[in-house]
Image (tube, rainbow over all chains, first blue to last red; front, side, top):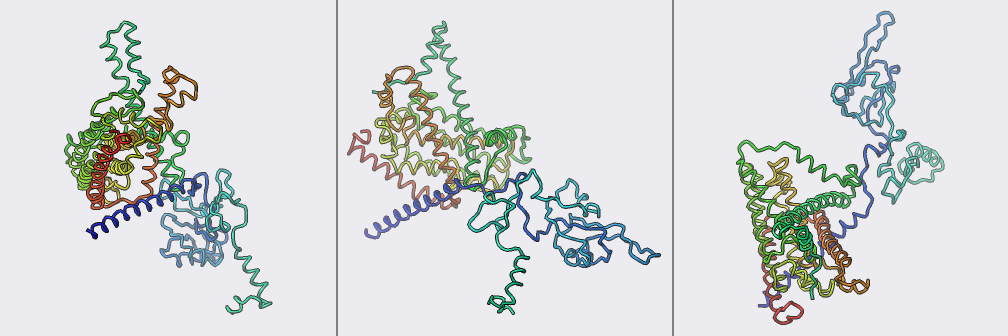
Length: 208
Length: 373
């Protein structure tokens, strides 16, 4: 008899616990309803791509020496460098250069190894086309200036979560022109140069 | 004393008879009006519910939800419905065409028919049938036949599993549901929804059934969610396991019938909870007090109109609060497994509702004044 009663009390307790946890869960869901949407209203709002974002590759035809290093370092030998040897000047003459962004994986090796810095990464990522062949960019298309989220008047640029100051979760609260949270690489470099001679910073000492 | 309140039918028929129509003709002319009105009300209720579902779901997930179709996306459900209306009607090649078509119809018709007994005021319902709430229980047991039919006719393993699950779920949750209703019926000595509401409207919100039947209220709500296949119990269409359950092979208008059926059922269940437990059209304070405060005679036409509209607003408001709760629950609770579902139904809700029924009977004998002796 006692065992039975115990079972019943256990059962009741479990039922009440379940109800309690359910209420707690509903409270969480309910609380979320009052919060500001965290989604980015895409065509009208866009996130500012992070620094070192690897978007569409920009190419400067005049700087290129047709060395084909980009082709060698590319995992799939993607860039097409179309050059001919000029017999008179005994120099390479570049005629065409193209990268097919339908195949490119945006690893950035070509940009990394280009000896003349004629390749660079942009923050352009809207590459959708109706025909995959139009993703094969020639040197003219590669040389176009990249579109920019911050300068487009029809777009509200928003900072990414990592670039927001501490305790702020909503990018709408921050002006996109405000300096980002934390130091820029150049600022850190300056700071390191200033602190190194005095040997005051233990961090840098220990690293050395 | 219960006032007759607004009687549109009587007024309409008297008006027609004064134009020289016979009594029968007046009655026949009256008949389609409330039916069309309730059908429209049900459809608009569904549109509003779909919109609410999308907006509240979005808010609970910190999204915005539909925004560009009409103001605040209010036309989005219309757009969805229109899309389904003009979509191609596909019957899978080796499916049973007849049963495949009959299934969604059998699901929708009993749900719409159940609106027969939903009162929005003393005389604001299609028909005050004597068996009232029992009619609803009887009609809702037709639905699993339709679900099973469409699941079987689709010639698809997911559909069949979904249909079987739907049938098992509906049948096992109908019993505690009926027992919970029975306790209410016992207290109000009537199956008629009108009498059930009237019995609750003696002292405003204090006389609502929820205070006398808290356990019954919870059981009824859980079972109603299970009958509507709302989220903690949406196993029949569990998309992670069964694609879309018995709806898998459906497209176009037939799918729209299922969709419509499930949402009408949700609104209907919410309305019935508000009728059975939350005082139906009753205002939180007795409406007679309002008439004395306003210095208006209770039987004056203006006050009757006012009371009638308050009644409709209160019924709809209570129902939509429950719909809101159902949507919140959808984003709070995980889906139960089929064994957990049947466990809850047979081992928890059924004994508890039986105990509830017995306790109600005992209380009715012990305190006839408070429990409707």
